Image (tube, rainbow, N blue to C red; front, side):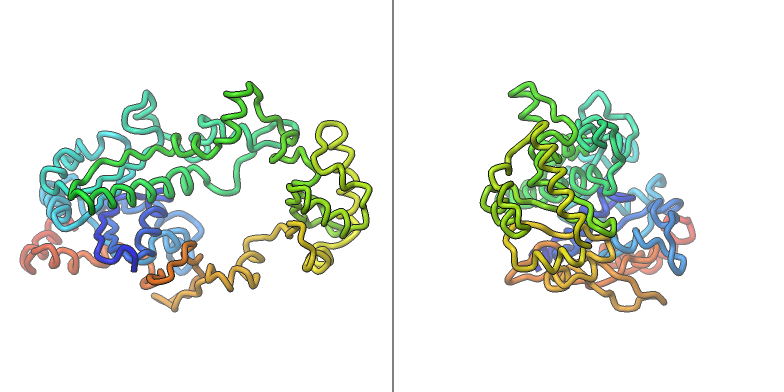
Length: 390
């Protein structure tokens, strides 16, 4: 597999970090999920639960090994230090300085392992005026200008249905940074500190809107710009039974195909109409879509080259042939008494396919296995248990 032989310590919780390390684990990296002995990953106790397990935790932590350590105790910190001697990468999601206070900051770990790639995922970065502030997905999106673009027609911000700052601005950006640092490590033997801020990542997700605002002085207005609903050719329309179709006939050739298909050649020259004229064209197209149901439109557009697809629910997206053909639906083997579905790995490699090798680890499941691998004796492990460190 692409990252076979790469070893990672995952000290993250909740969504951004676990998503990052799950992608790395899916590509073959050995990921050791280290949880606090007392609390563990908060996600374990959150709803929704099935058979006593949080299904979000199961989805985010597959293909990993798990252990618990009380890092506030000297012997617990020593375990982390010895683990660092045997790994390539460490990923953590604490506020800045937390790891330093634990005696496990980058400078200390770098001395033990100069090749170590240390990735810190935070809300606002290591050196910002907000470095100590708590935050969540909605806060990072709000400050980055992203949330102000995600609104109703009246301009009221909408809480996104997907945690874009956590997943894309945090998890994905961290993967990119880690892989780049891993390339540098392979070339030079040097590790480095990767500072990944979800605020920074969220701002980087709006390059078109930011360039428009800064270069032209034009703020994007709700449902009035080219890619946010201002065009009739690039919009979402309600069907006869109240479902929706997405129309993406952005280029003239696709709009022409759409107009010919629905028998409205008179609209062909209106594909880029905006403003008051664009609103009138949208009303015309809206009336067209209300004449059929979603399923009827799916059949109708099956052989029409005009970029028109149904708006699906999550369950519908999962069950469609497209997702199956792309191996995005993984039915896991029954594990620990229950069976659950997983989203497949999104990148396909011709030589090194990813795989679902193991379910998320139970709390402390691999304590003894990992400690033995880094040199602890059976007697030492027994003492760590008695001291309530693992």
